[in-house]
Image (tube, rainbow over all chains, first blue to last red):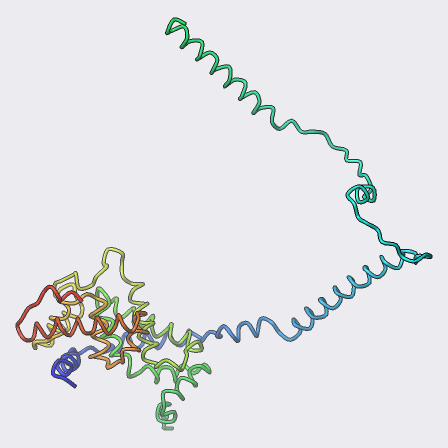
Length: 139
Length: 189
């Protein structure tokens, strides 16, 4: 321990500070009203009991089973081919033919009408300005 | 009936920590009993008034007990406690008081008031004027609280290299002050 360190330690010890009785009572009263919080690990554990994991596992299994049943029931309705399978080439035309036509009952919305009017007004202003410039310079 | 203090039954800090983590306020009170005066003295270096230091101490102990279950025993308990104290002191600082030592005069500085009350020449008085708050805190934790460089780094949330460099600068500034060679250019801390 060198001279400076000794001096600093001694001088720090010479600074006499003590917790007053009043502060002591305040702290004791405050501590009585506080309970330690659960740490994050135990909070997570308590928020997710074993039942949660069972419920989520069963839900996942049920969803997977439902998907398998739907897929299998869809394929079982397709009749088994009587002749040996032939290779079918999927061209855009054949795909378009296979997709049923949907009769959309919709009308084109006139959403650009106001923009078109604005554009016309601006073009008109430009023409007027051009004309005025030409008049001013005598063309 | 004679009531035996808990600290006589649970002698080690680790045992007291475990009891406090289990919810024993008495164990916590015993655990922090011999830190309180030292913490208050340290908080005087970080707060703008004696009352603020007392409030910071109360908040520190309450927060330490509230979050005792998150205490990581890989740290020294004192380091964890001082880190909480530093944060609580910072919360009490108003935005217009960025540097406590800038207050400058004895009337407004609670630590200097205590030093003045002791009526003896004190090197921490010079340190207060020569070093900035962070370097002063590092020097205090090293020489008044006997913390290691790693513990100071954790308490102040600084790197070990920052701590080493600033401890060296602080020492150099105080050495110069002690030896009468006032090298103000290096005495920034």
